[in-house]
Each structure stands twice: as C-alpha cells, then as structure tokens.
Image (cartoon, rainbow, N blue to C red; front, side, top):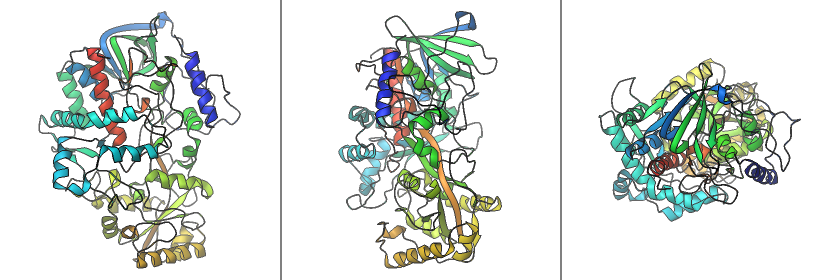
Amino acid sequence: MSNGLSRRGFLKGAMALGVGAAAAGALSGCGKAQTVPTEVDKHTQTHAGSTPDWLGEPPEVAESQITETLDYDVVVVGCRTGGLPAIISAAENGARVLGVDQSEKVNNPREDIGAFGSQLQIEGFKQYPQYAFTIDEHREDLVRYANGFFDYDLYNVWANESGAMIDWITAIISRNGHFTMNWEAGAETDRATSLCKDWSTSHSPQKLVDDKNVSFGSELADYAQELGAEFRWNARLVKCEQDSTGRVTGVICCDTKDKHYLRINARNGVILSTGGYAGNAEMLNARQPWNQAIRVNIPVGGGNSGDGIKAALWCGGHMDPVGAACMFNRACVKPDQIAGNNIKGAWFWFGEQPFLKVNLLGKRFCNESGPYDYMLHSTVMQPYHTYVDIWDSDYFAQVDQMNEIGCCRLYPWGNGAPSNMDISAMPAMLQKLEDNGYIQRADTMEELAAKLNLPVDETVATWEKYNEYAAQGYDPDYGKPAYRLTSLTHPPYFGVRTGAWYLASLDGVQIDTNMHPKDDKGNPIEGLYLTGNDSGGLFAVSYPNLSTGFACGRTMTFGRRAGRLAATQEA
C-alpha cells in the first residue's frame, strides 16, 4: 500500500502553515471513536518529513481476524448527508450497493441544502427578483471566504449540478406525501451596499405528517432499499484495501457490538462520507487550535473521528493545507466559567441573534452583524476567548427587525418559507437556561453586569454608548447596520457568557471533479471516491454561512455524482 510520500508531503505543508502540532496516539482498528476533545499533549510535536501523530500508520489486521467477507459493486461508508444520496444514485444506476455506518440506524442528514438552479429557486427568482444572484458573484465571494484556498472546478460542479440534485431529492421525499421542499428566500440587504453579502441558496425539507417514525433520513433510506440497496449498521471503518496497482478494492470494518472484523469487497468502488473529524482531539488540536480555544462542549452534534480522512490519506491522498470548521454562536457557560475545549456548557440557540456583544472587560469588540465565524474568531483575540450576549425584554420585535438568515432565523423567510426554529420556542428555551444558572436577568444594567462578573462601570458605559448609536442609526465604531442597532432600553435585561458550538470540520482530502482523492502527482486514486467533510477543496478557516447550506449542498451534490460514477464506471 502506498502511503509514505503523501503523508510527508502533507506534513511539510502543514508545518509551513504552523498547524503541525498533535497529541500522541494513532487509530485503533476496532477502538471507540472519541466524542469529547481533550487538551493537547504539549510535549508531543510532529516534525517535517514524518507522519503526523494523529495519522499514524494504517492498522494491521491479520487474515485470521477477518471472520466475515461480503461482496458488492459499490460500498458507501457513512450513511447520512453525503452517503444517502450516493447510495441512491449508485442503486439507480444499476449497482449492487451496501451502505455501512457505525450508527445503529439511519440518522437525519443536514436539512439546509444549498443549491443553485433548482426549479424552486428559478421560479422564486421570477417572483422575488431582489433575491436573485449570479454564479460569478457568488463564486468570488466564496473564494474570499477561503482566502484563495479554493478549487474553482469543484465549485463549478456544485454550480452546475446542485439544482438538479435538489429537484431529485424533492421528488424522492415528496413521493409519499410525507415531505415537501421549500426554497428559503431572504437577504440581509442590498448586496451592492452590504458589507457582508448573503445569498438565497438554501432549501429545506418540511415534514407534512405527524408520524415519529418518518424523518428526512428514513425517507431517503427507504427509497434506497426500494431500489435494492442494503445497509449494514454498527460497523466502523478501519481502513481501505488496495491492489498492487493502488486501486481501492474494498474496506475492512469492525463490528462495534462484538468487535469482529469484516472485509467488504467493492468491485466498482468505495465511497467515503464519514463526516470529518469534529470528535478527534488530536486532529483538532493539530489542524485548528484557534477553534479549540473558543469551543464549548455541549451534548448536541456528532463525534466523527476522522476515520474516512485517515483511510484516504493511507491510500496516498493529500489533506487541505488549512484547517476549517463550521461553528455557531450556540453554546453558553455559567458566569464563573470561560470557553474552551474542556468546558461543558449548554445549548444556546438564541446566541446568533446580533444583539450587543461585549468581552469580559465589558467592551464591544466587533460588528455583531457579521458572519458567525467572524464574530467567533474575533473572540480568540479577547481575554479568555469568551464574550457576553446582552438583550432585553423586547426581543420578539427586535429579532423580527434584525431579519437574520440561515438556520438561526426565527421568523418565516421573505417568500413565506418557514424557519427551522420559530420565535415562539424561545421563551421556554431561555427560561430553562435561566433556571439552570446560565442566563442572568436583572432590572438594571448595573445589576446584570455584576451577575455576569463583568466590570460594572465599563459595561454600563458600553451599553449607554450602544443605545446612543441605536438612537442615531449609525455605529461609528464597527459599522453595524442601522436596522440591527436596536436599543436595549426595555427592562428586564438578560445576559449570558457565550462560546462556539463546533458542528463540523470542513477541511478534508483534496479531490478531483470525479470525486477521486489525488495522489502526489495529482493523479486520481482509482476505486475511491470522497464526499462531504472527508473531502476538501472549498473551505479554509471559515465557513461562508451567509450562503446558507453550501456545505450540505456540495455534500449531497458530490454524493450523488460519486454514486453515479462508481456505478457506471464512467470515471
């Protein structure tokens, strides 16, 4: 198996960018995935020319340990956002398909699906021309988000195929009348004058039946099985297998219940869609330590351990040069705590609303109206990497006025599509956080600052200045848009210490437009396809959250493409 040059090449690039440090340890062939990142081992350092500690060597599995062998045309590892479209597409194109996942049953894919050119969007642009945009302007905005670490050709695959993917998914989930699909149309303001442009890319399924056994994921899995696809649950990827030419011929997995190993041969190809490395402490500390400093662990989200990425690198693939994550301002800690990857906090959906945000010195530090990641990365520059959200009792009207986009939106979209969460859910959610000691309430700002352990005089001065800016409709300090400068003059006042909820890693293994990982010379690794957060090429440092659902949309688009190509052997 070829594995030396690609790992050395990867590490040289990583060290040049200062992301080479990692905690000790290597993949255990049948071990348990990490789910809560821990503090980095500061005494372990990788060096240029060696294998990163988080990668290690591929695990050895003796033939005598493999007690089960299966044969299929296409094997898809990871049966969620990218894997389900891949399984369906491969089955539609005549392949005998097996979907493999370490979960016990199908989980819901992400439900904000970014696309361009769907029938819903095309018709919507006619009715709401103010939300229309071109690929050229959208592409260039995403290039800037990625600081140029961006594969234009991969983007063009999304641009050319994502609309048809949405039409395809829509037909599948609506076939039984259980779901419909909505295009979510809404923009912050005129893109010609806005400091941060947003794009009406998102589509979301809407459930129409009151049946707990029906979900977005179950609809897709059921359809796959109608086509003849099969699923194997409770099986974790250990590594891929290659023949003498380097072609991937299948995978070795481990049954998570009885720990036996199984070999699954894939005559046409293997598709990896295991979801990145959000639950792998070593990779996170090595690849993006700045995000570890501001994250708060909360019991929401996945614990993907990087198995697919490691498997592709062992086959000769290359990692993106810069770490990237999708994070949200949705985690909070108590007034005597600060953010950090060892802290366990609480789910705080309301955190993305652009109210007043101050650091632990009681001072504003950013434009609260900016993209989620931008505000969170600004927090890295603040004392103890933690900030405080402050709002008042008039938040129903103010949230409506501030007109947020994406999955944090709490009112229907401009075209009437429902939001993922409704404003009516907030009082109970906020009250629970208050009851549990996270959110603080007070009748005066002095009292609120004291409860949050903030400098009282500085916090009050900041609040007074902010209200002056709201009254005049202009923020000379940070340029916050006037319609989001809502005055905080309606007691009681509320505040909470906030950090980052880490949803997913976004840097992955570099692929070509046929979804193959590339070797040292840029040639495709035959028999292997990647989609979702196992694949790279489109993100660096930040997620372009103002293009709602872009990551999910490219994952489903690439999954569908990979399934077709593997089944037909077109590429």
